[in-house]
Image (cartoon, rainbow, N blue to C red):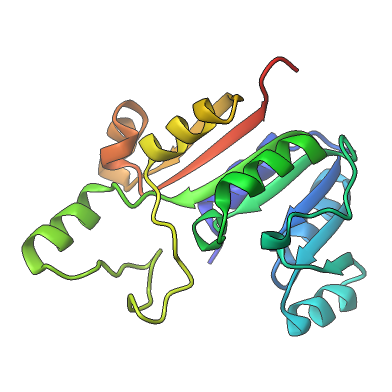
Length: 199
């Protein structure tokens, strides 16, 4: 199944861009960027199996832990840095965001919105951490360590002097407009284009 956040990210990438894909997994999205947007890209992942799969697709990938600070990349080395549905898995997401807007002219970030009304309802009624199609694992087995809402992310960007260029949201068919108007409550996921303030 195609992730809707990745379709949005794809649409925001200018053809021919230099792209850094953080947490690239098996390289499927990086290959899609290459094939559909004619990008020159580099992927970063920590899992050796993902690296092998990515290389088998003819992709350039580097094994590195994003939490270590991405020091092997220079300032403005890429047009766009992508971090799709992995922000909540990072030990220091604020440091990663700062590095992303230094490394790239702009960055694109997507994450599941833990402020979504179904998450709130599930926690309120059942008293247990929610599970869904977007978050299918138990609380003790999830890679998510920093639960983030739309409001949390926007507040963090303000604190870090990061400008939000554009925001898109994903919501159920009956809630699409509400997802745009009241994203913290009705968006199941959010996607942002950001850059260092003043650039």
